[in-house]
Amino acid sequence: MKLSHIKIILRDFIYDFNDKFSNLGKPLFAMWNVFHKIKFATKKIIKEGRGNLIYESDKLSAAKVLWINPQKIEFYLTNKVVQSSEFSKELKGDWDLTKKLIKDSIFYRVLNSRFLDEEKKEEIKKFNLILQKDSNRIENGGFNNKDEWEDKLREIESKYYQIKNNLDDFMESNRIKKKQILEKWESFERIVVAIDRDGQFLVVEGINNLLIGKFLAIPKIPVYVSIRHEAWADFKKKIYFFSTNYRKRRLYQRVTHPDLQDIPFTYGDERFKVIKENLSIFHGTLLDIGANLGYFCREFEDEGFDCYAVEVNKLYTYFLTKLKKAENRKYKIINKSIFNYKKNQELRFDITLALYIFHHFLKRKNIYLNLINLLKRLKTKELYFGTHNPDEFRGIKVYRNYNPEQFVNFVLENSCLNKAELLIKMNNGRNIYKLTVED
Figure 1 (cartoon, rainbow, N blue to C red):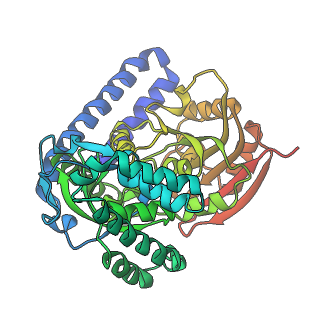
Figure 2 (cartoon, rainbow, N blue to C red):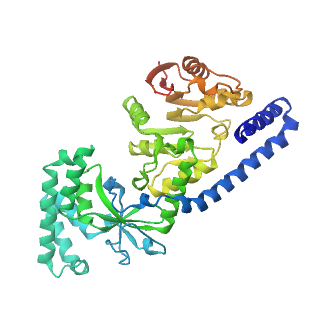
Figure 3 (cartoon, rainbow, N blue to C red):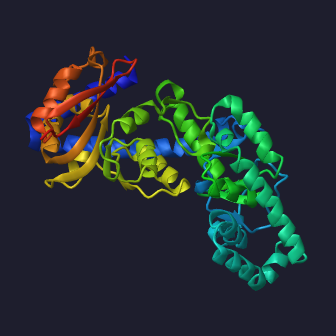
């Protein structure tokens, strides 16, 4: 008998015993929770240690171009220790702390006046005033005089309009066009970045090209990684190692950080696109129950939602927290069971996501009753509900096992929602429904 089967039998025994004899079962239940805390700590240490040993070296290949939304790059690096010619090097130390906001740079202020306010005469006067006030900063930037500065600005301006006049090509994201787009960007100046200890991108070279991408709102531009901070490189190895121990040696969700795109995953963007296309509400609060690594919170935050990620698993939360900081996100992380979140209070959210999570609450009677209580507390305008394939419980003792239609009816009967619409049937037998309140 496999160790995993023994664990399931032991867990079921403890849960059954606790259901029937709650007073006697509490010590066993507490010991089971302690076991899981020790298991988390042990796994984390193993992943941190072994990750450095088995990580595939080509994952840091300098030949790979990262495609990133220019709006996500907010800082430039002032430390000259980082050389753009040293691609894909790891470097420890405090070099990454010498970063400054791009919006505070003279290039940003001047180009903002030229491009975003190009029709306004008052802004042109403001531009000339900036040149006079910041003549010393111009010299520090490598320009000997105002004429050299103006020549550089004309060069940037020429590139700006070249791209602007062919904007459709740069908006195209399919692979056929990417090579052509890359050649156009590099004909001017390649964008070289460093990645700091937290996973954020810092511009080393090519800030002018980056600003063009920002001002034209181009969704993705090519960048080259010069240096990774050792702490980020270590985290990258940890999450890769984590993926090799997950289902089918891949993550459950796609991670959105551009430097982690090589890590395989089970679920990509399909579910998000389906939900987004069917939204009736376009701003407000969003609750993601069982957030995993936070994919939906990151995507919906970009859509303007105030997101809340509920994830009880401590190991997932460890990576979720790191990824949130790496992408400079604002969503809230709640590391506890959804049943204990605002316990005995109403949960009011405009949008709620419960994608392939509620079926886990069908396994035990006490958890099933907790689910009913949760549904009664949940006051939401739209619930995107993912049902499981009933065959997933084959050979497993569970308290309830609903087919998709039965499960949807169960949710409607116990919640404030009264209308259901099937959005998509997945290839693995799982479905996604939109549940709403019909007046």
